[in-house]
Each structure stands twice: as C-alpha cells, then as structure tokens.
Image 1 (spheres, rainbow, N blue to C red):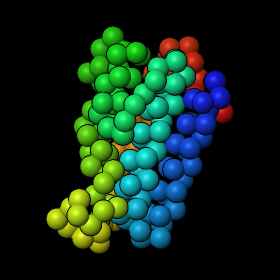
Image 2: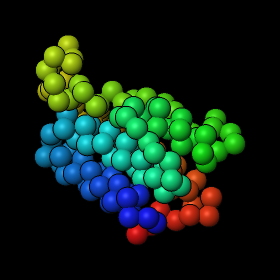
Image 3: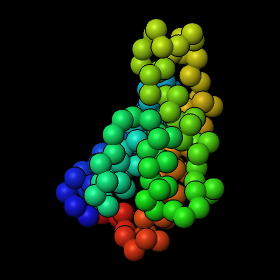
Length: 137
C-alpha cells in the first residue's frame, strides 16, 4: 500500500475507534461526526491506493467514484449508508447547520451511524481485496 493510502487508512481506523470511544461516553453527536470522518477517509484510502485523486467530503460522491474504479455493478454498494453518514458532516458540529440541538443525537442515532460506517468499511475491504489488494496493515 503506498504511503498516502496507508496514512488515510490508518486515520480512518483511528476515527472509527474515536467514534466508538465517544459512543461509550454518551457523546452521540461527536460520535456520529467521527463515523462520517471514518467513512470519508476509508473511501479516500481505497481511491488513493489505485492512484485516484479523491476530492471533497461527500461520501455518496466518493462512493460513486469508488464504484467506477472497482465495480462493474454498483447495485450492492452501500449507497443508503453513504447518504445517511453524509448527514453527520455538518449537523453535529455547527449550531446553524441544524434545526435540532446537539443533544437530539441520541444513543440510537449514534449506534446507527456506527453500524453504517462498519457496513461501508467492510464493503470497501471486501471489494479492494477482491481486486487483488489487501487493506490490512
């Protein structure tokens, strides 16, 4: 794995661990944000690995770029999870980006974000591995 892809991959794993720790502390809004970050960075790692140059923070857009590179049929890609995780980029961090308050992120919402990011990361790992690559460190 080239150095840049490896750094993105490590950061994605770190962000997932941070999300889990925040969940354990009942910090559900920040947990959801770090789930979004882990998904974004995992997608970027996979794209950098094949010399793509991902840009932006939109998880659905990054997943679309990923699908073009890795999949002949993207119907099995976790599009719903990508779209849901994308909602956590701004909302948990900025009071003017939401109508609810941060405390409206409850345990159920954070757990859903954790499940979504794990589905997306497992999907990426399986498809990169199927393409003859391995995302393990």
